[in-house]
Length: 248
Image (cartoon, rainbow, N blue to C red; front, top):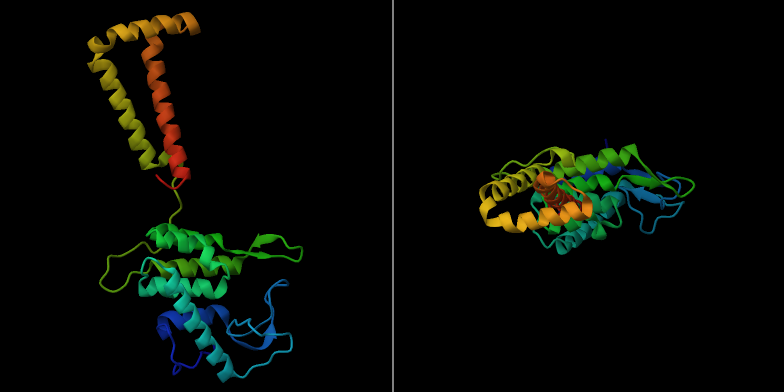
């Protein structure tokens, strides 16, 4: 593989930052398109000022690559309200080099919230290209590229605590520890309330039983369990909503 000139003033570590992007992009000295609706590209993935007839030399392609990386590193640093580690910075620049809408991406939003696992998961959201009919379809090459970016983003810096090197799938609601703990807690609390404080609530409970029996025909002995079931269902539904909103 052709490597960009290592003597240029690269804004990222050459081995850990520049070469991964160079390997992803490859270098072609004549204008090309990877997909029908993409802009014309030349050198190490450059598009600005490129036309179908563009032809570059290798030194010029390397120089353009270095300048582009410098611009993107500055832009990513400015956009990050949470200071990225060197590996996070390299991964975010790698992402920005390939994805034009990175500033409004879920990756950047979650990084700036300090949700690094969520940000790593979000790389996989940007894996589609437009086909000849303008439809967005998943692309195997982009899917693999996003996985490499996510792995680099999660790579621990020297002296830091290890971070997961694979993005784990989100657990289902039935297996969610948050839901399980919350539900069990509610059940225990409700049982303690019904079983341990019967004397204190005997009067009101009797009234509720009579009203429920008159209105709904419910068996009085089943009422505490019906109430308990309603409470548990309400709490479980609330936890599901919180999880869907990213708050649980």
